[in-house]
Length: 319
Ligand SMILES: [Zn+2]
Ligand SMILES: [Zn+2]
Ligand SMILES: [Zn+2]
Image (cartoon, rainbow, N blue to C red; front, side, top):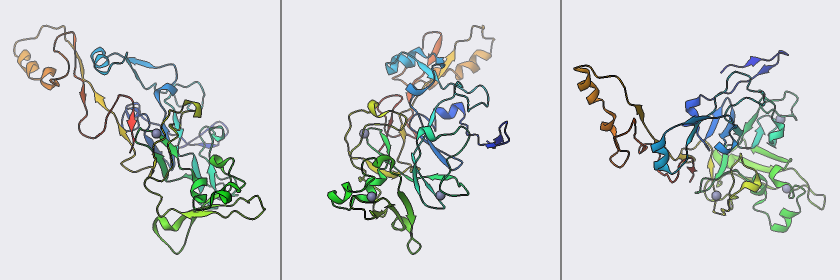
């Protein structure tokens, strides 16, 4: 969607997701890259109270749930109003960097300004900040930022690491930079460096390149997702893997599909019945699925094509 101007003449960017896309491809836990920014679809517990109920009794019975809701659509373009009913997407990863001064910024929710992308406050030209390319995932579907402060200090002895002035608030460290070397290429050309000081007053200067960052290196899983508060974290503790956020192995949604066809009350005319008969939905029925009686036909079946791992509805798995 194109940018537009608000009442003061300031250009506001508009980021929209179609309602159907809130199921696939941008369902709960999916990462959405749009106009140089990156977000993740929040869980349905974060949706506004005003929702549209979807009735599909047989599918609900099959899945052992009480009912379904459709994503609440926005009614107008006033996306920057707090009372609008759109589906929440949360900025993720929270770590961004400036392509000009290379400073890394942990962008917090309170820093968000409606309709405005994050910009570097250290550079006079205020260029847009870019999301970091890497995230942490675990086999149980949890998703988190890479601990970049720890990565930069991970090759130091523990006592030197703890003497860094940023060690207490490492999750939002303010002196990290994302550097790129001129004489190298690939991941080894990229590094994260700490610009803080140590307890003895000397520069910390801890630095590590990203050559071997991919794989099981992210530490233990905290059991959370980006839209959740820390106190909502599950008990997990599995080894996390660091992956590129746009990689195809990040998101495996659990997909069930169903077809509902209301029974027609009109008496079939001669000839039309035979045509209808060929199109009877029971032809499509999963043998293990619904019976054919009743006023509607509901044909739940697994999506066997795109998603290889599935456990429960409304959950995603990552590996
Ligand atoms: Zn900058
Ligand atoms: Zn440091
Ligand atoms: Zn986990």
